[in-house]
Length: 209
Image 1 (cartoon, rainbow, N blue to C red):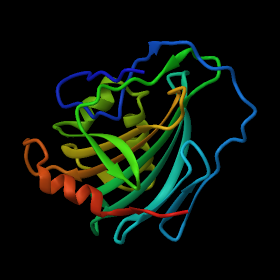
Image 2: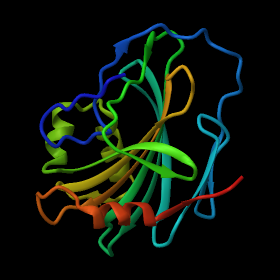
Image 3: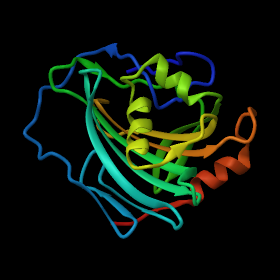
Image 4: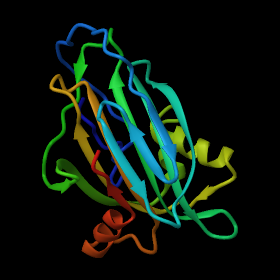
């Protein structure tokens, strides 16, 4: 699936349209189990991973949905809010995979990568001037669903944000992906710098199994 920007500086974890490709036949593999306990997110497969989020990031919940009738998505949220429940910074993790009947694969251009927990992630960082514009343009996107989830929990996300996104494909068929996005309220329209990217990797640790 190739992810294309709807307009300049769009959230890279939002709307995407797939490139057609042969799908592998469905298997009888056991569905992954994902849980959060004591700041640790554990996924049994696609990918198998354990991630501990540092304080003051607070786990506030998860949601599952079908994205564009093509893929199943599961989102997890860890937030650092102020006293007014305005989010200063947060992590959003998304486990996503095509439905068995959909003939498509994920396909990303690789400009920059980073090693996290012994795995290679495609990485990019941008500033989004208006989250509300992104949501209004496509209310069914994963971005829109994430924003609505945060609101349902009583949290407010700044309309202008900066983000650092980490992505990896987690199966040989390239039909499943894992996305982790670090987000901060933006203080300017400038593209995030190296200090921002460093902060993005300091709030969590990938644990050995």
